[in-house]
Image 1 (tube, helix red, strand yellow):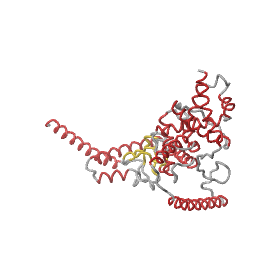
Image 2: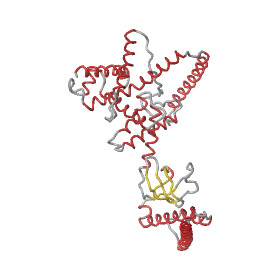
Image 3: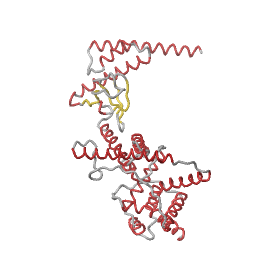
Image 4: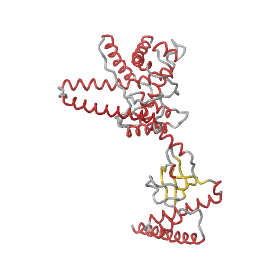
Length: 407
């Protein structure tokens, strides 16, 4: 049993050594503890083999190829948001960055042209060897996330307790890894697992790229696991879609998270049964022709609300298009009158659309959709329309029932 524990400790030590350089060059920060699936014995042995090859190369003095990480350069303090700045200094910095990026793009295109002339076909033996080595590179890229899983298991099960008083002491004395860095790896591995389970087409190849997604795996803030997975997968996929790179950078992912979080905060201002008025229709195909219509909020989502208007229900409406009607503004009785009118018009519209789509009925509904109350004449007209539509509906139901009996 002691020998088995020694072998397990050695395999983790080999993996951890590969992360030590990265630990020394970055700022550490405290993050929440997370739950994650444990690494299988096969994954651990796979990492052990890879790290052993790297260690052998290091000892033999041969140069080792290392993974390159694309980084966006942003002037100023680390993490400072420069987008939207109107200062002259920011403008100059952005101009310089754009110039450098353009030069780099042109240089890369020239390099690609030169390299394409040097391409030659591989032999069958060379192709097989390349596929084998290429697969090992992909495995090594995943090793950071697998290391996080291994550390998580050691921490959760307190497997360090025989030789060390705490997980922090184990990390420091054994691998010279700070506790905050270990939790970064552990949390990143959980995010990676959510992306794998979510079936994303493009997976991250660096722990840096998923840092902005770490807060969404916090079970104390998001108790529902499906919601955690949805938040992480949706933000990652949107970042992939908007990025010009194959895999988005940390900054690109963080920008998407801020954008979607702001939309979610706006949506949280509304509650079911709230009354709203449609103040803007430009930019929304769903709301065309419904300017100043009143509506009832029936559902509140993370990034938008569902509202019922005189012309039916419309999902995922961004809060920028609507404005809440308050009790203080109209009074409780007036709000109830508006709700009743919306419900009545919505029913009439639905019945008419299911039948002959009478243009006269459509015109009446549209004319009353932006009203807060109806007159005696309006009431008489609506009652006549409802009786006509309900009579037609009963007639259709009767005909259908007779046909079934004949059949």
